[in-house]
Image 1 (tube, helix red, strand yellow):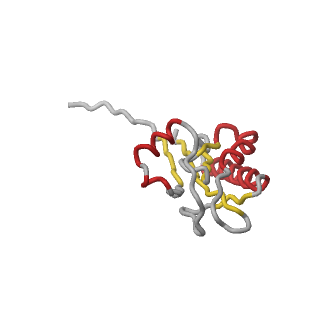
Image 2 (cartoon, rainbow, N blue to C red):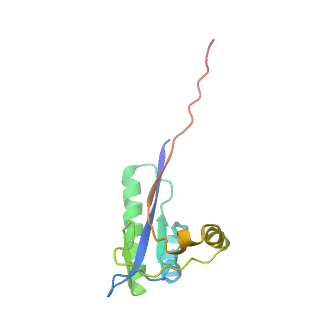
Image 3 (cartoon, rainbow, N blue to C red):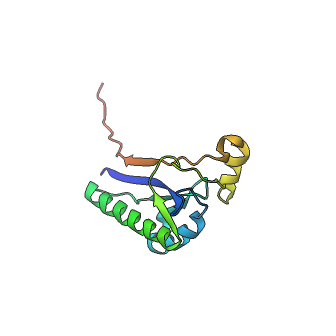
Length: 137
């Protein structure tokens, strides 16, 4: 059976200025109560991610992603910020590296390259079963 999963990264922005704000920990804590393990920190505290579980159909994936987006947007709104699906911040904002050994290692290794790096992406994962065939020689 083929399964699909999607990771969507979002920016967190100030509703008045449109500039990014470091609210990922607060928004993530609120959203995690409803979305569980699907909410993840990103490199910058101005970004947050929702990752779907593996889904067996596009209909199921659509429902999971819609629910995740709605809940994450509600959590952001409750924390006084907007959830923005944009690849880069259209109106700027200061970046702050997220906590954790992984992010500290990235910041140490790539220094100035990631200091203001606030790029978001959407990743689609497809699991395809391995088909084995016996070859007759």
